[in-house]
Amino acid sequence: MSAIPPTRADLERSLATLGGRRLVMHCHHYNVFLQRTIEEGLKDRAPQLLTAAGMEAGRLLLAGLEAEAPAGSPGEVILRAAELLRAHGFGRADVAGLGERGGAASMERSHYAIGWTSRWGTRRTPCCFFVAGFLAGAVAVAGRIAPERVTGRELACLAAGAERCSFAVEVW
Image (tube, rainbow, N blue to C red; front, top):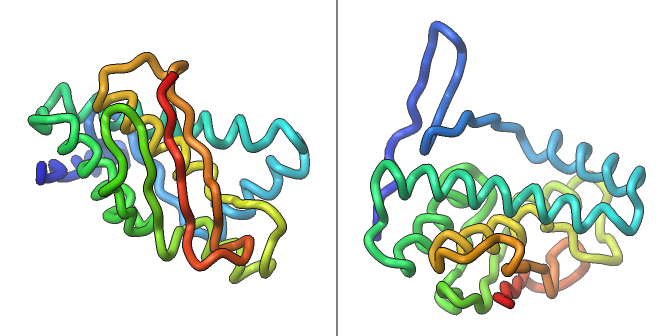
C-alpha cells in the first residue's frame, strides 16, 4: 500500500498542508453541528451539497498527493483514500469492493454516524455524505475520470439503525 506522506506544518503561519492543500481539522461535534445546520437550511438540497463537498475534498487532496508522490496503481489510490479517512479520524473504510470503475465500500464506525448518534440519537436517513463524496473523489482520481461522471451515495447508515455504513460509487 502506498503510504501517506507526512502532513507539513508551517508553524510561523499556523498552517498544515498535505498534497499541496491546506488542512482544517474539526472534531465530530463541530462537523455534525455544521451538517445539521446545512441540512436544516437547505432541506432536500443538503445531501447533494454535502456529498459534493466530500467529493471535492477527496479529489483535490488525492490529486495533490498523486502529483507529489504517485501511488502506483488505481487500487493503491483507493487504498490511500481509505488510509486518509482512517488517519484523519473519519473511520476505517473497507474498500475491497471499490475500484477505478466504482463499486462498494463500508465502514463499521463512521465519524459522522457516531457523532450524530452521540448527540441526537438515531435518524431516519443516512448522514455520511462527506464519506460518500470522498470515496467518489477517490474513484475519480484512481480512474482519471471527470468528477461529474462519478457519484457516491450512502445506502445504509449506522446513524439510521443499520449495523454499518454502506456506500455505492457509480461511474457514468
